[in-house]
Image (cartoon, rainbow, N blue to C red; front, side, top):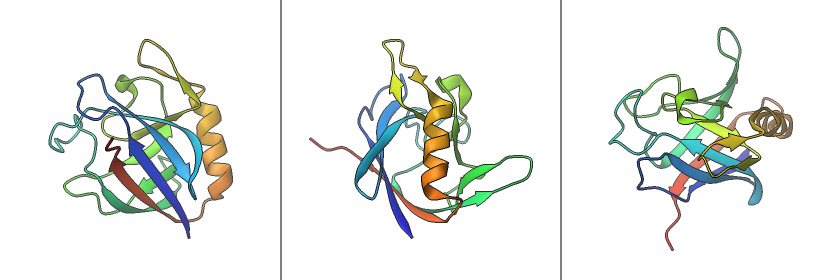
Length: 129
């Protein structure tokens, strides 16, 4: 099972949280999540921790995080701004001065291609300088 890590870089702001996503220790892309608001449903990013992720199909298709405390339907998907997420993790190949991700579809396609619909373990942590 591949090890995927999300390192939150800009954790305690109200502008959203930018981070980096690594697969087996190699940088793949950037992430954007909602600010931390104590895990409030549809408003906050999810807590740091380790989550099993599985590929799902149906009304929503993509990677779903399992057993997120007090949350459901947390996925990794395409999006550029905080308005594109209610707590999910957005991926992008770059970001701009307006605090938006860019080339999100490219990042998600690359991510899903590498993982090939296989389950993986996602570790979410804060960067501590």
